[in-house]
Length: 250
Image (cartoon, rainbow, N blue to C red; front, top):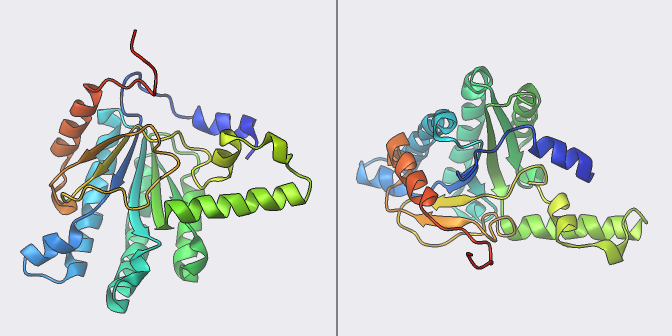
């Protein structure tokens, strides 16, 4: 994407000095939460989807302008056929049910990930929601579906190689900014904070390039139990951190 357009997109939402403008969340623990309730895993995924609304709606008051959530990874296809089918159905229902509310709340929605493997109905719903909310400015919600950090970088490199071959890009001029401009997140600022719920302490191939200088919070709370108050507490801890980005504090 041309740099001028990229900067225009990024400046559309004003930053909050010192705060976590962009928070990314690995929403983990839905299946375990359901098991604790004696319910099937999809029951937990439905509860997790409901939790998303509360967290999105809390963002303006908490100073979060960009929220990116990890809904389905490129590795999640390894789950049982029944669970995958149930998740795809849940995504379709979520978009259909939440479209009006998201638009009324002035939320701009984007999707990242490789859409090719998703069914056509889901792709259409995603396209329609992005188009409907493209001028909204309260919160930038990005939903990662069939997303993997390594896959994203590989797709970007293929596109760069193609443009170099076609004479659209000078290979000698390729740098970090070039790669960033070919990623799914090209119009988004890098995340300030990445949160993973459910007690797991790994990043699971999520926003690998973009999170080079992000702060991380690994918390024990399962995603369906991740409330606005817990979100606020995590943000408070983040605001107390000293971020130097490789420099030495003077």
